[in-house]
Image (cartoon, rainbow, N blue to C red; front, side, top):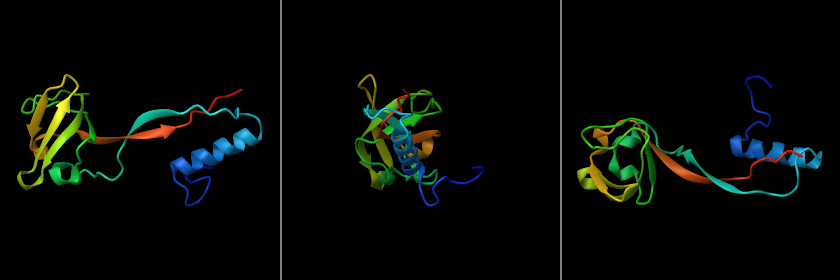
Length: 125
């Protein structure tokens, strides 16, 4: 179907589940389930939200698509939000090497909030 949804009012996850169930019913996809976790962009964190520390929560995972000399965070890095200082608009993140970096989110471009999502990959027979 061009330019539309297979199931009106159904999001990506819903459509994927419906297609997977149909393929299982037809015997194209096996009935055994294999679960995995992947990181996907948070849909509730808009570009305008990203500049405000109050929109982040401790333990949020962030991915930086741009590096910053000011913050020292490199392009492609991931970090976990350690603490949020909303009144001063500051985030403290823990980087992969265990170091902590505090910064004003208005000074770091290219930040995406990431969340874990469980998926069930389709296994063809």
